[in-house]
Amino acid sequence: MNCYNTHKLDCGLRIIQLESNSNVVYCGYAIKAGARNERLTGKDERTEEGLAHFCEHMTFKGTEKLSSLKIINSLESVGGELNAYTAKEETVYYAAILNKYFDRAVEVLSDMVFNSVYPQTEIDKEVEVVCDEIESYNDSPAELIYDEFENELFHSQDLGHNVLGTPETVRGFTTEDCKRFTGRLYRPDNAVFYVLGSVDFNKLVKRLERIFASASVTCNATEALTYAKPVRIENGVGGKTKSVDHGTHQQHIMTGTAIQQDIERWRIPLFLVNNMLGGPSMNSRLNIALREKRGLVYSVESVLTTYTDTLVWTVYFGCDHSDSARCRRLTMSELRRLARTPLSKSRLEAAKRQIKGQIALIAQNKENYAIDMAKQYLHYNKLKDNQRLLDKIDSVTSEEIHCMMNTVLNTDRLFTLVFKGGF
Image (cartoon, rainbow, N blue to C red; front, side, top):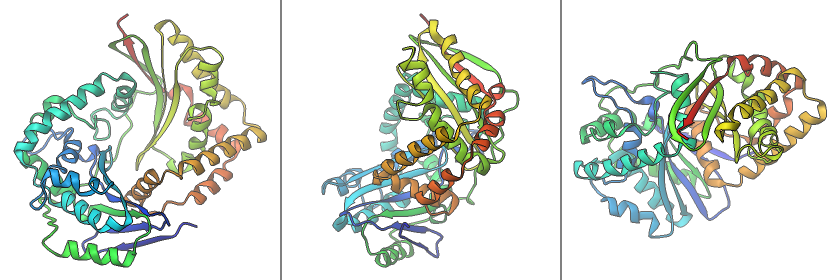
Protein backbone atom coordinates (compact mmCIF):
# COMPACT_ATOMS: atom_id res chain seq x y z
CA MET A 1 0.00 0.00 0.00
CA ASN A 2 1.35 3.43 -0.92
CA CYS A 3 2.19 5.64 2.06
CA TYR A 4 0.55 9.01 1.42
CA ASN A 5 0.37 12.15 3.54
CA THR A 6 -2.25 14.78 2.74
CA HIS A 7 -3.28 18.13 4.16
CA LYS A 8 -5.44 21.09 3.15
CA LEU A 9 -4.43 24.62 4.11
CA ASP A 10 -6.94 27.26 5.19
CA CYS A 11 -6.39 29.02 1.85
CA GLY A 12 -7.63 25.89 0.07
CA LEU A 13 -4.32 24.53 -1.20
CA ARG A 14 -4.17 20.74 -1.08
CA ILE A 15 -0.83 19.09 -0.30
CA ILE A 16 0.01 15.49 -1.10
CA GLN A 17 3.19 13.52 -0.44
CA LEU A 18 4.13 9.99 -1.41
CA GLU A 19 7.09 8.85 0.64
CA SER A 20 10.20 7.49 -1.04
CA ASN A 21 13.64 6.58 0.26
CA SER A 22 15.44 8.20 -2.67
CA ASN A 23 17.68 11.22 -2.17
CA VAL A 24 15.91 12.89 -5.13
CA VAL A 25 12.62 14.72 -4.59
CA TYR A 26 10.00 15.31 -7.30
CA CYS A 27 7.62 18.15 -6.54
CA GLY A 28 5.54 20.92 -8.03
CA TYR A 29 2.20 22.62 -8.46
CA ALA A 30 -0.66 21.19 -10.51
CA ILE A 31 -3.32 23.77 -11.34
CA LYS A 32 -6.73 23.47 -13.00
CA ALA A 33 -5.77 25.98 -15.64
CA GLY A 34 -5.61 24.33 -19.03
CA ALA A 35 -6.73 25.21 -22.53
CA ARG A 36 -10.22 24.12 -21.56
CA ASN A 37 -10.41 26.99 -19.07
CA GLU A 38 -9.75 29.65 -21.69
CA ARG A 39 -12.53 31.97 -22.78
CA LEU A 40 -12.84 31.75 -26.52
CA THR A 41 -14.47 35.18 -26.51
CA GLY A 42 -13.87 37.44 -23.56
CA LYS A 43 -15.69 40.54 -22.36
CA ASP A 44 -13.82 42.57 -24.95
CA GLU A 45 -14.54 39.95 -27.63
CA ARG A 46 -10.89 38.89 -27.73
CA THR A 47 -10.18 35.19 -27.54
CA GLU A 48 -7.96 33.61 -24.89
CA GLU A 49 -7.09 30.68 -27.16
CA GLY A 50 -3.50 29.68 -26.36
CA LEU A 51 -3.31 31.87 -23.25
CA ALA A 52 -2.96 29.00 -20.74
CA HIS A 53 0.13 27.75 -22.56
CA PHE A 54 1.47 31.27 -23.03
CA CYS A 55 1.11 32.01 -19.30
CA GLU A 56 3.06 28.83 -18.57
CA HIS A 57 5.95 30.20 -20.63
CA MET A 58 5.70 33.65 -19.06
CA THR A 59 5.56 32.36 -15.48
CA PHE A 60 9.31 31.71 -15.76
CA LYS A 61 10.02 35.33 -16.75
CA GLY A 62 10.30 36.94 -13.36
CA THR A 63 8.65 37.91 -10.09
CA GLU A 64 9.10 40.91 -7.81
CA LYS A 65 11.93 39.01 -6.09
CA LEU A 66 13.41 36.84 -8.83
CA SER A 67 14.52 37.70 -12.35
CA SER A 68 14.05 35.14 -15.11
CA LEU A 69 17.76 34.31 -14.94
CA LYS A 70 17.57 33.72 -11.19
CA ILE A 71 14.59 31.42 -11.69
CA ILE A 72 16.50 29.41 -14.30
CA ASN A 73 19.60 29.16 -12.11
CA SER A 74 17.80 28.57 -8.81
CA LEU A 75 17.62 24.79 -9.14
CA GLU A 76 19.75 24.03 -12.17
CA SER A 77 22.84 25.53 -10.48
CA VAL A 78 22.68 22.65 -7.98
CA GLY A 79 21.90 19.99 -10.60
CA GLY A 80 18.12 20.17 -10.34
CA GLU A 81 15.50 20.51 -13.05
CA LEU A 82 12.63 22.99 -13.35
CA ASN A 83 10.03 22.76 -16.09
CA ALA A 84 6.31 22.91 -16.89
CA TYR A 85 3.68 21.81 -19.37
CA THR A 86 0.15 22.83 -20.30
CA ALA A 87 -2.60 20.40 -21.28
CA LYS A 88 -6.30 20.81 -21.87
CA GLU A 89 -7.30 20.47 -18.22
CA GLU A 90 -4.25 21.50 -16.22
CA THR A 91 -0.92 23.27 -16.11
CA VAL A 92 1.83 21.58 -14.11
CA TYR A 93 5.04 23.18 -12.84
CA TYR A 94 7.47 20.49 -11.75
CA ALA A 95 10.92 20.16 -10.29
CA ALA A 96 13.41 17.39 -9.52
CA ILE A 97 16.00 18.19 -6.90
CA LEU A 98 18.28 16.61 -4.31
CA ASN A 99 16.34 16.53 -1.07
CA LYS A 100 18.83 18.81 0.71
CA TYR A 101 17.73 21.58 -1.68
CA PHE A 102 14.01 20.83 -1.38
CA ASP A 103 13.20 24.00 0.62
CA ARG A 104 14.70 26.07 -2.19
CA ALA A 105 12.45 24.33 -4.71
CA VAL A 106 9.35 25.03 -2.61
CA GLU A 107 10.20 28.73 -2.32
CA VAL A 108 11.02 29.19 -6.01
CA LEU A 109 8.00 27.27 -7.28
CA SER A 110 5.63 29.13 -4.97
CA ASP A 111 7.04 32.54 -5.88
CA MET A 112 7.02 32.03 -9.65
CA VAL A 113 3.60 30.39 -9.81
CA PHE A 114 1.78 32.91 -7.66
CA ASN A 115 3.92 36.06 -7.99
CA SER A 116 4.95 36.30 -11.64
CA VAL A 117 4.66 39.83 -13.03
CA TYR A 118 4.47 38.99 -16.76
CA PRO A 119 6.51 41.99 -18.01
CA GLN A 120 5.55 43.23 -21.46
CA THR A 121 9.20 43.41 -22.52
CA GLU A 122 9.52 39.66 -21.90
CA ILE A 123 6.16 38.97 -23.57
CA ASP A 124 7.34 40.75 -26.72
CA LYS A 125 10.32 38.37 -26.89
CA GLU A 126 8.49 35.18 -25.92
CA VAL A 127 5.74 35.70 -28.49
CA GLU A 128 8.07 34.72 -31.31
CA VAL A 129 9.35 31.69 -29.36
CA VAL A 130 5.79 30.40 -28.97
CA CYS A 131 4.95 31.18 -32.61
CA ASP A 132 7.97 29.11 -33.67
CA GLU A 133 6.67 26.32 -31.44
CA ILE A 134 3.28 26.55 -33.16
CA GLU A 135 4.80 26.41 -36.64
CA SER A 136 6.99 23.47 -35.64
CA TYR A 137 3.87 21.69 -34.43
CA ASN A 138 2.02 22.52 -37.66
CA ASP A 139 4.90 20.90 -39.56
CA SER A 140 4.32 17.62 -37.64
CA PRO A 141 1.09 16.10 -39.00
CA ALA A 142 1.51 13.00 -36.83
CA GLU A 143 1.09 15.28 -33.79
CA LEU A 144 -1.26 17.88 -35.26
CA ILE A 145 -3.86 15.28 -36.23
CA TYR A 146 -4.62 14.56 -32.55
CA ASP A 147 -5.75 18.13 -31.91
CA GLU A 148 -7.60 18.38 -35.21
CA PHE A 149 -9.42 15.14 -34.45
CA GLU A 150 -10.61 16.38 -31.05
CA ASN A 151 -11.63 19.69 -32.58
CA GLU A 152 -13.94 17.77 -34.90
CA LEU A 153 -15.40 15.75 -32.02
CA PHE A 154 -15.92 18.80 -29.78
CA HIS A 155 -16.39 21.47 -32.41
CA SER A 156 -16.51 25.06 -31.04
CA GLN A 157 -16.24 23.81 -27.46
CA ASP A 158 -13.52 24.56 -24.92
CA LEU A 159 -12.19 20.99 -24.96
CA GLY A 160 -11.74 20.99 -28.72
CA HIS A 161 -9.40 23.85 -29.50
CA ASN A 162 -5.63 23.68 -29.79
CA VAL A 163 -3.54 24.13 -26.64
CA LEU A 164 -0.96 26.32 -28.39
CA GLY A 165 -3.40 28.75 -29.99
CA THR A 166 -2.52 30.48 -33.26
CA PRO A 167 0.18 33.02 -34.16
CA GLU A 168 -2.56 35.63 -34.51
CA THR A 169 -3.97 35.09 -31.01
CA VAL A 170 -0.55 34.75 -29.36
CA ARG A 171 0.77 37.97 -30.90
CA GLY A 172 -2.09 39.84 -29.27
CA PHE A 173 -1.41 38.78 -25.67
CA THR A 174 -0.42 41.42 -23.11
CA THR A 175 0.60 41.67 -19.48
CA GLU A 176 -3.02 42.40 -18.60
CA ASP A 177 -4.19 39.23 -20.38
CA CYS A 178 -1.73 37.08 -18.44
CA LYS A 179 -2.65 38.68 -15.12
CA ARG A 180 -6.35 38.29 -15.84
CA PHE A 181 -6.05 34.58 -16.69
CA THR A 182 -3.74 33.69 -13.80
CA GLY A 183 -5.70 35.87 -11.40
CA ARG A 184 -8.77 33.86 -12.27
CA LEU A 185 -7.17 30.42 -12.06
CA TYR A 186 -3.72 30.42 -10.40
CA ARG A 187 -5.16 30.22 -6.91
CA PRO A 188 -4.37 27.96 -3.95
CA ASP A 189 -7.96 26.68 -3.86
CA ASN A 190 -7.53 25.59 -7.49
CA ALA A 191 -4.18 23.88 -7.07
CA VAL A 192 -2.28 20.98 -5.52
CA PHE A 193 1.29 20.99 -4.24
CA TYR A 194 2.72 17.50 -4.63
CA VAL A 195 5.86 15.72 -3.44
CA LEU A 196 7.30 12.31 -4.14
CA GLY A 197 10.31 11.88 -1.90
CA SER A 198 11.81 11.71 1.54
CA VAL A 199 10.88 15.00 3.21
CA ASP A 200 9.41 15.94 6.57
CA PHE A 201 5.73 16.40 5.75
CA ASN A 202 4.90 18.40 8.87
CA LYS A 203 7.72 20.84 8.10
CA LEU A 204 6.46 21.13 4.54
CA VAL A 205 2.94 21.97 5.73
CA LYS A 206 4.31 24.64 8.08
CA ARG A 207 6.49 26.09 5.33
CA LEU A 208 3.57 26.36 2.92
CA GLU A 209 1.37 27.81 5.66
CA ARG A 210 3.99 30.48 6.22
CA ILE A 211 4.34 31.18 2.51
CA PHE A 212 0.62 31.56 1.92
CA ALA A 213 0.02 33.53 5.11
CA SER A 214 2.72 36.10 4.35
CA ALA A 215 3.25 38.66 1.65
CA SER A 216 5.72 36.32 -0.05
CA VAL A 217 2.86 34.90 -2.09
CA THR A 218 0.00 37.03 -3.30
CA CYS A 219 -3.24 35.37 -4.31
CA ASN A 220 -5.09 38.27 -5.86
CA ALA A 221 -8.16 36.72 -7.42
CA THR A 222 -9.34 39.26 -9.97
CA GLU A 223 -12.51 37.30 -10.69
CA ALA A 224 -14.50 34.42 -9.27
CA LEU A 225 -13.02 30.99 -9.93
CA THR A 226 -14.37 29.67 -13.22
CA TYR A 227 -14.91 26.02 -14.07
CA ALA A 228 -14.77 24.30 -17.43
CA LYS A 229 -18.07 23.85 -19.21
CA PRO A 230 -19.38 20.27 -19.55
CA VAL A 231 -18.48 18.81 -22.91
CA ARG A 232 -20.98 17.77 -25.56
CA ILE A 233 -20.10 15.22 -28.21
CA GLU A 234 -20.78 16.78 -31.59
CA ASN A 235 -23.84 15.27 -33.23
CA GLY A 236 -23.50 13.72 -36.65
CA VAL A 237 -19.74 13.07 -36.48
CA GLY A 238 -19.93 9.32 -35.80
CA GLY A 239 -19.60 7.10 -38.84
CA LYS A 240 -18.24 9.88 -41.05
CA THR A 241 -14.90 10.56 -42.71
CA LYS A 242 -13.35 13.98 -43.25
CA SER A 243 -10.39 14.55 -45.53
CA VAL A 244 -8.11 17.59 -45.32
CA ASP A 245 -5.34 18.51 -47.77
CA HIS A 246 -2.02 18.89 -45.95
CA GLY A 247 0.51 18.47 -48.72
CA THR A 248 2.36 15.67 -46.93
CA HIS A 249 4.16 12.76 -48.55
CA GLN A 250 2.13 10.24 -46.55
CA GLN A 251 -1.51 10.06 -45.66
CA HIS A 252 -2.08 10.45 -41.91
CA ILE A 253 -5.22 8.72 -40.69
CA MET A 254 -6.97 8.77 -37.33
CA THR A 255 -10.10 6.84 -36.39
CA GLY A 256 -11.88 6.94 -33.07
CA THR A 257 -14.67 8.20 -30.88
CA ALA A 258 -15.53 10.01 -27.66
CA ILE A 259 -17.40 8.36 -24.80
CA GLN A 260 -19.45 10.40 -22.37
CA GLN A 261 -21.93 7.96 -20.87
CA ASP A 262 -21.06 5.18 -18.41
CA ILE A 263 -17.44 6.37 -18.27
CA GLU A 264 -16.62 4.46 -15.10
CA ARG A 265 -18.20 1.31 -16.49
CA TRP A 266 -16.10 1.33 -19.66
CA ARG A 267 -12.85 2.96 -18.50
CA ILE A 268 -10.92 -0.18 -17.45
CA PRO A 269 -12.23 -2.55 -20.17
CA LEU A 270 -11.32 0.12 -22.73
CA PHE A 271 -7.91 0.62 -21.10
CA LEU A 272 -7.26 -3.12 -21.53
CA VAL A 273 -8.58 -3.33 -25.10
CA ASN A 274 -6.64 -0.23 -26.13
CA ASN A 275 -3.42 -1.92 -25.03
CA MET A 276 -4.28 -5.09 -26.91
CA LEU A 277 -5.09 -3.25 -30.13
CA GLY A 278 -2.38 -0.62 -30.41
CA GLY A 279 -0.47 -0.26 -27.18
CA PRO A 280 3.31 0.20 -26.94
CA SER A 281 4.23 -3.47 -27.36
CA MET A 282 5.24 -4.82 -30.75
CA ASN A 283 2.77 -7.69 -30.36
CA SER A 284 -0.26 -5.39 -30.39
CA ARG A 285 -2.89 -6.61 -32.84
CA LEU A 286 -2.70 -3.60 -35.13
CA ASN A 287 1.10 -3.60 -35.23
CA ILE A 288 1.08 -7.28 -36.18
CA ALA A 289 -1.62 -6.78 -38.84
CA LEU A 290 -0.31 -3.58 -40.46
CA ARG A 291 3.45 -3.67 -39.94
CA GLU A 292 4.79 -7.10 -39.06
CA LYS A 293 2.71 -9.16 -41.49
CA ARG A 294 2.37 -6.68 -44.37
CA GLY A 295 4.89 -3.85 -43.94
CA LEU A 296 2.30 -1.16 -44.65
CA VAL A 297 3.19 1.32 -41.89
CA TYR A 298 6.18 2.38 -39.84
CA SER A 299 4.07 2.76 -36.71
CA VAL A 300 0.47 2.36 -35.64
CA GLU A 301 -0.87 3.20 -32.20
CA SER A 302 -4.10 3.46 -30.31
CA VAL A 303 -4.48 5.98 -27.50
CA LEU A 304 -6.99 6.34 -24.69
CA THR A 305 -7.17 9.93 -23.42
CA THR A 306 -9.01 10.48 -20.16
CA TYR A 307 -10.67 13.80 -19.43
CA THR A 308 -12.74 14.52 -16.35
CA ASP A 309 -16.05 14.08 -18.16
CA THR A 310 -15.25 12.11 -21.31
CA LEU A 311 -12.94 9.46 -22.78
CA VAL A 312 -11.40 9.81 -26.22
CA TRP A 313 -10.17 6.68 -27.99
CA THR A 314 -8.20 6.84 -31.24
CA VAL A 315 -6.15 4.77 -33.66
CA TYR A 316 -3.47 6.56 -35.69
CA PHE A 317 -1.17 5.49 -38.52
CA GLY A 318 0.63 7.06 -41.46
CA CYS A 319 1.01 5.22 -44.76
CA ASP A 320 1.49 5.62 -48.50
CA HIS A 321 -1.54 6.91 -50.37
CA SER A 322 -1.87 3.65 -52.27
CA ASP A 323 -2.06 1.66 -49.01
CA SER A 324 -4.52 3.83 -47.08
CA ALA A 325 -7.70 1.98 -48.03
CA ARG A 326 -6.13 -1.37 -47.19
CA CYS A 327 -4.83 -0.12 -43.83
CA ARG A 328 -8.26 1.19 -42.93
CA ARG A 329 -9.90 -2.13 -43.85
CA LEU A 330 -7.40 -4.06 -41.74
CA THR A 331 -7.98 -1.74 -38.77
CA MET A 332 -11.75 -2.17 -38.98
CA SER A 333 -11.26 -5.91 -39.37
CA GLU A 334 -9.39 -6.11 -36.06
CA LEU A 335 -12.12 -4.15 -34.30
CA ARG A 336 -14.87 -6.29 -35.76
CA ARG A 337 -13.02 -9.44 -34.81
CA LEU A 338 -13.11 -8.41 -31.15
CA ALA A 339 -16.78 -7.46 -31.50
CA ARG A 340 -17.71 -10.73 -33.21
CA THR A 341 -15.92 -13.26 -31.05
CA PRO A 342 -15.53 -12.98 -27.25
CA LEU A 343 -11.98 -13.37 -25.99
CA SER A 344 -11.04 -16.80 -24.75
CA LYS A 345 -10.01 -17.14 -21.13
CA SER A 346 -6.37 -17.70 -22.09
CA ARG A 347 -6.23 -14.63 -24.39
CA LEU A 348 -7.87 -12.44 -21.77
CA GLU A 349 -5.44 -13.61 -19.09
CA ALA A 350 -2.49 -12.98 -21.42
CA ALA A 351 -3.73 -9.44 -22.10
CA LYS A 352 -4.10 -8.77 -18.37
CA ARG A 353 -0.67 -10.19 -17.61
CA GLN A 354 0.94 -7.97 -20.21
CA ILE A 355 -0.67 -4.69 -19.12
CA LYS A 356 0.04 -5.37 -15.45
CA GLY A 357 3.71 -5.85 -16.28
CA GLN A 358 3.72 -2.59 -18.22
CA ILE A 359 2.12 -0.74 -15.29
CA ALA A 360 4.86 -2.03 -12.97
CA LEU A 361 7.59 -0.83 -15.34
CA ILE A 362 5.98 2.58 -15.90
CA ALA A 363 5.77 3.11 -12.13
CA GLN A 364 9.58 3.11 -12.01
CA ASN A 365 9.58 6.50 -13.76
CA LYS A 366 9.14 8.49 -10.57
CA GLU A 367 8.75 11.91 -12.16
CA ASN A 368 5.86 10.78 -14.36
CA TYR A 369 4.35 8.85 -11.45
CA ALA A 370 4.50 11.97 -9.27
CA ILE A 371 2.76 14.09 -11.92
CA ASP A 372 0.07 11.43 -12.45
CA MET A 373 -0.43 11.31 -8.68
CA ALA A 374 -0.86 15.09 -8.61
CA LYS A 375 -3.32 15.13 -11.49
CA GLN A 376 -5.49 12.43 -9.94
CA TYR A 377 -5.58 14.30 -6.64
CA LEU A 378 -6.22 17.62 -8.40
CA HIS A 379 -9.15 16.48 -10.53
CA TYR A 380 -10.71 13.67 -8.49
CA ASN A 381 -9.37 14.16 -4.95
CA LYS A 382 -8.27 10.52 -5.08
CA LEU A 383 -4.95 8.93 -4.17
CA LYS A 384 -3.18 7.11 -6.98
CA ASP A 385 -3.13 3.39 -6.18
CA ASN A 386 -1.69 0.95 -8.69
CA GLN A 387 -2.89 -2.03 -6.70
CA ARG A 388 -6.46 -0.81 -6.96
CA LEU A 389 -5.94 -0.46 -10.71
CA LEU A 390 -4.54 -3.98 -10.98
CA ASP A 391 -7.54 -5.34 -9.06
CA LYS A 392 -9.92 -3.61 -11.46
CA ILE A 393 -8.05 -5.07 -14.43
CA ASP A 394 -8.34 -8.53 -12.89
CA SER A 395 -12.11 -8.08 -12.55
CA VAL A 396 -12.69 -7.37 -16.27
CA THR A 397 -14.56 -10.20 -17.99
CA SER A 398 -14.66 -11.34 -21.58
CA GLU A 399 -18.38 -10.54 -21.64
CA GLU A 400 -17.72 -6.93 -20.64
CA ILE A 401 -15.21 -6.50 -23.45
CA HIS A 402 -17.55 -8.11 -25.98
CA CYS A 403 -20.38 -5.81 -24.91
CA MET A 404 -18.13 -2.74 -25.09
CA MET A 405 -16.90 -3.60 -28.58
CA ASN A 406 -20.48 -3.83 -29.83
CA THR A 407 -21.59 -0.57 -28.25
CA VAL A 408 -18.83 1.92 -27.40
CA LEU A 409 -16.40 0.88 -30.16
CA ASN A 410 -18.97 -0.16 -32.70
CA THR A 411 -17.34 0.62 -36.06
CA ASP A 412 -20.51 2.35 -37.28
CA ARG A 413 -20.04 5.16 -34.73
CA LEU A 414 -16.34 5.83 -35.34
CA PHE A 415 -15.20 9.08 -36.92
CA THR A 416 -12.21 9.15 -39.30
CA LEU A 417 -9.96 12.10 -40.11
CA VAL A 418 -7.55 11.90 -43.06
CA PHE A 419 -4.66 14.26 -43.77
CA LYS A 420 -4.17 13.89 -47.52
CA GLY A 421 -0.85 14.63 -49.17
CA GLY A 422 -0.10 16.50 -52.32
CA PHE A 423 1.94 13.85 -54.12
